[in-house]
Image (cartoon, rainbow, N blue to C red; front, side, top):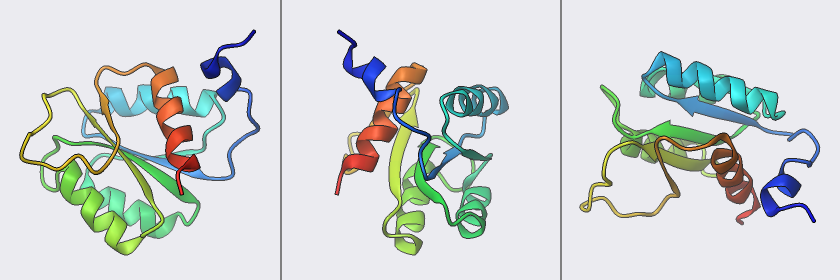
Length: 130
């Protein structure tokens, strides 16, 4: 019997795109490659300003996965701004640092390093929430 993860990856190609925001080029390329290989159209951005421009330019983006610790606009602020402009946008935060206890945990969070399967599961879960 297939596991939940195996079953989740057999679904047809999603009809939405994922925006991946990370200031580390190797992480961006690696995660983009993994998502694309799994059938997820992916747009990347190196910082918050690029992410906001990408959201404006790509109407098919439904999920944003963003690193928290970035120069300029951090992931928390990016999430606030992006969801103010695009209220239906699903956001997943990613970090390799201990979560800041002063920040409310209102959004799903992935701890780095995360596996491609964990990322895909988080995206699928975000898209199923109403």
